[in-house]
Image (cartoon, rainbow, N blue to C red; front, side):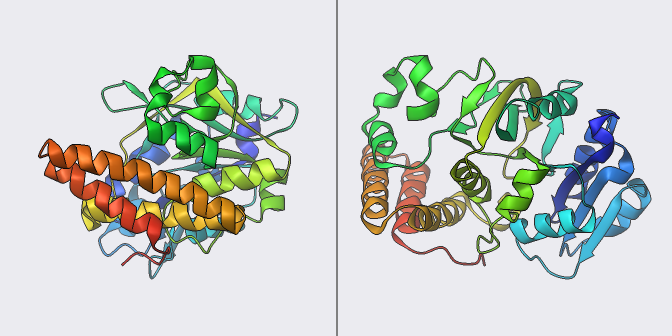
Amino acid sequence: MDPRRSLTVVITNWGTPDHTIRAAQAVIADGVPPDRVVVVDNGSQDDSFERFQQQLASCVLVPLEENIGFGRASNLGTSTLSGDHYLFVNNDAFVHEPGSVGRMLDCLDLPGVGLVVPRLRNTDLTLQASVVPTHRPGAELVRASGLSRFLPNRWRPRWSTHWDHGSSREIEAAIGPVLLVHGETWDRLGGFDERIYMYAEDLDLCWRTRLLGRKIWFCAEAEFVHIGNAAASRAWTSPRRAELVARSEADMIRRHHSSGTAHLTIGIICAGLAGRWIIHSALRNRDAATTMRASIRGFLGRAREAD
């Protein structure tokens, strides 16, 4: 049987129905049956759900009265429609290369693979770097020092964010607007960590997948276009978003590392951000400097529900 027929796709919407409809139609066009696509409307205050009833009537539609956060909404989507495997697609991510969903599913047949991510493209089809190293002192020191750009490409997936994303291979983690999770792995993980309201859910899922002894696979043969920040940009400025992202990542680091390692890792990250803040301030790049300061505040604070 075609594995796409037993796949569950979950797309979460928050006030951006045009993107959501496009994302759902793109995976359907790539071979996923409409009744295997779950659209969770996460407390939108517009006509999103009515539009889904009109244009995505064959999909599984789940309306929520309030925004319960991305992780909880995604978990609710999987409990609404169980599947052999689970594909989570941000509503601003769209299949670009035909056959991408099938190629990602094929990767789950590789020994030990529990999670798969595709290559991402910006809207102008340039590469959108998504593969990152796990937050740990050594990797953060390389990144904070600026040496990551000078590392050989073969070292970069583990030590840098500047890898060329040119081939399929095992990776440590990825910023994941598109995540395919093996069904057994998903069950063992217990879903997304619902303590995370927004941001870092993908990195946390990667971290916990590796703790299970399962591999994370980058599939270069599958491609999606990702707009990025489509919903959040309506609610928060870039500095506010930077602070929220940093708070969520810092909280994740504290959960997964010992106290001493977590403090060291966060300290190195903040030192790197402080250096960039000084440079941007000297160059009178106020927007960038403000964003760097906001990130530092986030890493030194605690994660909290977005407001």
